[in-house]
Image 1: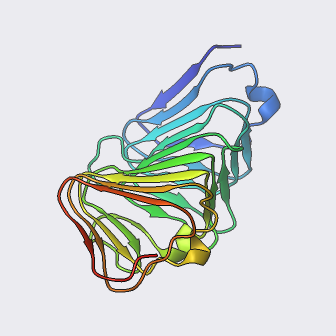
Image 2 (image 1 turned 135 degrees about the horizontal axis):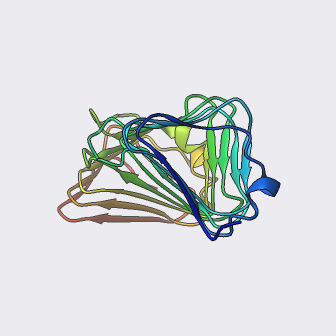
Length: 219
């Protein structure tokens, strides 16, 4: 029984078959941290009764379903911001917060073909601020989410943040319909809509410290 529990190692950490019943006595946040390596969810699904925070320098690999029943989920795959820590969600695997908040910080996100994220409010932050590519044109070294990957994200509201630039290319309404509220694009530099038209099913808010350039139709 604990108000919160922190598990830390300089090596790799693996989470395997944690059950809601056996995590219920941790009434605060369970923190799993690798200060020099990766954190992986492997072998069997895990369900946490309360909040979970995962902190890794060299990536978070989700190879089994992860469910948070209440309290939300924090995933930081690149804690030192050196651009080597990605979040990888394997095919047919779901990361779910049961409608609570999910906060993700990563160099990049890879949902493969059928990996998915199901959240209430979802924030995704570019860890090394090289920029965000949303849609058909990836940014070299950036946090890139394809149109198809966007279709595998369900959230009440979605916020994408970087101090770098954001490039939006060819987003389709079908792949934004699971964002039931607002999508916010927040850049410390420029936001550009380029190459192909983009359509968002629900509301869109764009914030940039420099310029917003709409070079293609935006609906």
